[in-house]
Image 1 (tube, rainbow, N blue to C red):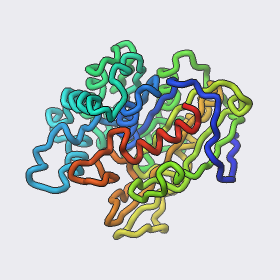
Image 2 (image 1 turned 60 degrees about the horizontal axis):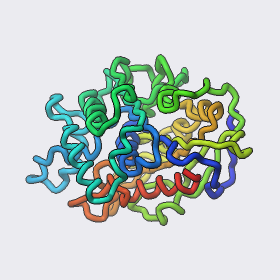
Image 3 (image 1 turned 30 degrees about the vertical axis):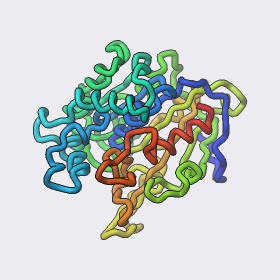
Image 4 (image 1 turned 120 degrees about the horizontal axis):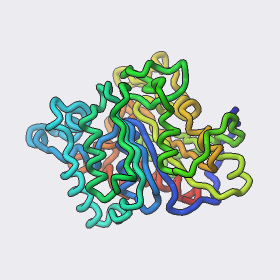
Length: 354
């Protein structure tokens, strides 16, 4: 059983191998995974994208920008999640051009780092939230950016709904598209992702003995409410790493409505009576911890929460992949090293030693 420390701690600095970290996410966490991965690719050796679209996908089609002020959000919902036809999905070639321009602006790490990355990309064939044509463009984008085909594992063969697959009997049926977006699957996504990124990995531990620590995330985003990030984040540290063993860091980024502190909003205010009982499930029941224990992996679980105010519109507790956290909504920066959430997560990684 995982040892959960109730105290609030400072993120420790550990014996972490530089450049060997990785990141994965579901849904909005998958979009954030792509953004973080490209922004700081020198820090990473691979990424796992489950139901996520390509880099700056909301900008690959700007037709609606001429007629509405909220074009970014409209594009996020219509083009990067559920396009009416595959032809209307985000354009991988345009994403590559945007990434190259962002590289020239020195706002992301050199794209030459893509050549050494290992990518796991998954789309469920019954996903009605972020549809398969969108995720197919993510695969194509990484291929065009220089990730060798042999290092990309792409799976669109499973009749899964919008979800991270688990082995938990209490989770949703495989084809469901509903909260908490954790579905019973033929395999465990966390294990498949990490096994692909780190091919030398051992089988998951049946009895993790490390510690799950809670830390104050506000240290990493200066308590800026625009970040829509929770007060606390979590990190799992295997026992061998606590004892000084060399480690690698994996960042596991939850999706919408999956944060540990998420509460639904009703007419602009938090409705505690309508709070989903999801809590810590993305952290404790998805398989990351068991794999981490066997392979000296530190798992960082950053947390975002819902917000519904004049400053920040994020009632579903999603990570920012269209610009809600930006200072200038007309030209949002949600995708570079300067983005508020990306700065915070990378600062956590740096603090751990990655």
